[in-house]
Length: 419
Length: 161
Image 1 (cartoon, rainbow over the protein chains, first blue to last red):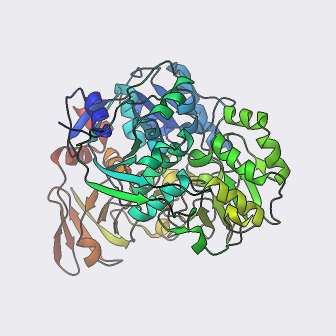
Image 2 (image 1 turned 180 degrees about the horizontal axis):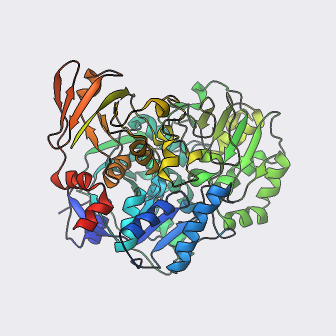
Image 3 (image 1 turned 135 degrees about the horizontal axis):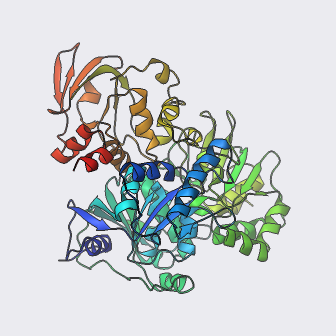
């Protein structure tokens, strides 16, 4: 029976020859993930179930990243609960401050995910790992707590929507623009309970970094997972990071898709999501030159080295506009270190940016750059819901790192071409 | 299982940041979380919500973050159930897992209004608009999911078996 890559991974982890959309399957989990916000509730579930041992201490990752370095006593308590659980159960992949970064940045970076894996995380952006040709989906804390105990969970096999990107990308247009455009096309509920498969000649040329950005935002269309077929670029990325080679699966040519969208990219401009929804998309030429109070470069969507490098290249020798607070947060300690080595950090400091420690930062309005009433921010993150980054009467616009960099210098939402 | 209360109307795409903003997620205590339910969207909600009140909404309720604190805050605040045209995937799963009834209906969000009195019979999936004397039926839920609700959540359900 012909299958998509998502169906193949689910079939294999369910111990089945084949699966088809709509079926409920019980699957083995290769890696279970929780963060400082979701782990404490999951640990409570684990205890209430009466579980004594975790299913596999090497297949669990606990990553404090949302409110670290601990922003207040309550957050410190939450991380403490997580840390004590990790110690008690000798969890191999617990990331202490100094090693920790954004979960969806560091897990691939450390080689903990290989193509063909099945990853379940108590975080909606767990779908990021689809960039590596893995199946990964977000759940809540109760599901994750049960997985910590059993290593298994049940899933409904999603039908797949195929996205085919064709043509040639213009300068200043990349993965973030492709996914924002796609969200505008599908809407925030356009892929609920579905799998998104990113294909076409354009995706074949995308770096891993850009693929992570796209898979990361699959959930913004309501999707269960977003996935790329792994290829030479994936292989190269894996070779530097993991001893496991992974299972390089591809969708069968006659696999069944519920829907297919062909997207021509030749004339695509940089894309911006206007308040207050990630599907409220306009090409940059149609966006009002909104005056900005803050620009944030970072997050699990765009906190990788390539993102910082692209921004720094554009910003060399320039200055942040008066009145703009420019916050940059590298996604992991190794990205931070490399950004120092390459001179990116110095460039950004010269521009007038402030560099934060690896964490989720202001993306979810937790700390390190909260917005006041009436303030406007441009962010490279993934959500611009009401109150997402601070006061309920603040506004968040979403864009790529290069648009964010150009806007920080110009002081209003602007294209790199305006520099 | 019968639930009776007043209707609170919401629109489409109510995200989990609106149900409970992330800045309140530095604690896991459900009573603390409940205090901030719909804090930004409807600050009066937590002061006025009664036990058994029913949240009625449009499409894609609970989209965004996977935070289980969202259904947990609503349940602890006293909300008896959510009836929406559709739900976001993770929210739907989380709600059943913590024993919080969520039902899909195209009709109810069109027919009831803010403040209406509504009763809900979970075993039949029947919703009664008391003032209008109107009867609606939600999309049926599978038996095992109703058993999870009856048990009070996935943990209690698994322990019983």
